[in-house]
Length: 112
Length: 113
Image (tube, rainbow over all chains, first blue to last red; front, side, top):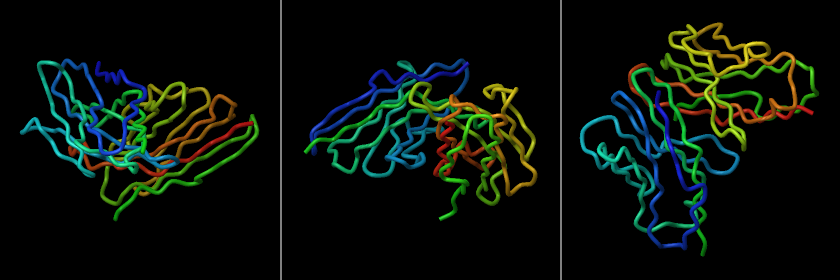
């Protein structure tokens, strides 16, 4: 069975500081990994995805993530955050069936 | 931009009433998913379809929930009878087969009193 762990429920950070949101997964087969963002009272929006190829993937809004198979991690990073990045971020894993299994989410709280 | 459309956006009902939520997937997408989001449980997969056929509904309480795709442009999630613990935001998502990328609707916020 596949699962995702997001250890940090909330990450406070000051504007223009760098941030890393952690995600670890477990799976017995090849995986596809995703980060979705959810702004208040909205649906989920795809931020970036890893399907194959380069382990460093770039997404929208200046975010990037690195797939690390040996550490079973897919951490999300941004070198300089903005107030508008305040949102809930979900890491997710899927296999051949498109079925997305989500982590519990990390609230990124950007402070001025 | 193509989008997944969900109705209603908000629904308040009383315990025991029937609730039907609808989803129009993106044209050409042949996989459809229903998720439920609550503070306590996070995002839970309830059911999903491929080419209108249900593939997995193991996450759905069978006694009161049902999910169907009457045609390729409509997916429904029905709760009968509804209970206060069903209060949540229900998301529909669709994707093209094999692409492993889902597009989510804005959600239906259900409150059962």
